Amino acid sequence: MEYLLEAPVFTIQAALDAARFGVHRLELCANFPEGGETPSAGMLQTLKSELDIPVFVMIRPRGGDFCYSPKELLVMKKDIELLGEMGADGFVFGVLDSKGNIHSEACESLLRAASGKPCTFHRAFDVCKDPEASLEEIIRLGFKRILTSGAKNSVSEGISLIEKLIQKAGDRIIIMPGGGSKPEHVHRLKKMEGFREIHASCKTTVRSINQYFNPEVKFSADPEDFKFHLGIDHSIVEKFLEAFEE
Image 1: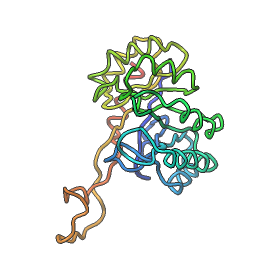
Image 2 (image 1 turned 90 degrees about the horizontal axis):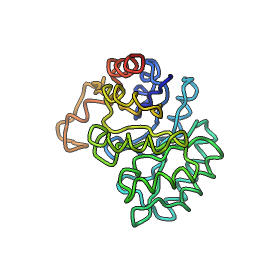
Image 3 (image 1 turned 30 degrees about the vertical axis):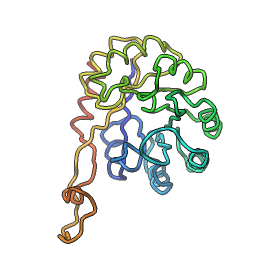
Image 4 (image 1 turned 180 degrees about the vertical axis):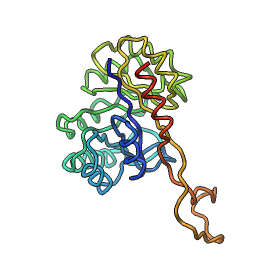
């Protein structure tokens, strides 16, 4: 059985390192503090010119909830069309209505804009009102996978629901655990026939090469944020890959 490791990346160096370390697919995002937003076209084009592994692109016009206005949905559709032309291998998005249900009409419009490229329904799933009913609707709409922490803050907390979803989904859709994923989750989930993929940040902090800091200016609440970037930890990637083989 072959398993797949997907990692979210927020910087060009993290993306290049993830591919070099053996990550199988990238989820390209911007704005880590907000949990991921739509990245730049320049970032995608640069990565597609240098990497051979698939790059799925986050489509999220802002942080916060997943109930979007008509204008925000228009931006999402345009981003899918433009980034698709620039080589995106797939897209990651999710839309809910004001009552916590899957917004089927909005999702259908975005799926059409994707022109057949595979789409992941992201962790908006974890804040929907009825996970099992939402699973069936997401399958009906034509998404290829669901990224979920099991409707909890982390995979560790939500793993029981994840197992239930994998069993219920069968071969109709991929249930991809994500949100605090650890190598030990692979050992448990490998016992299930439907487990195929896992999403893990494998993140670390990398010190900036910048040496000058103006003590009179702050760009965030924590001045230390200005001294570090998000990176990928090679040892964590290795542990996931080893767990696949064990």
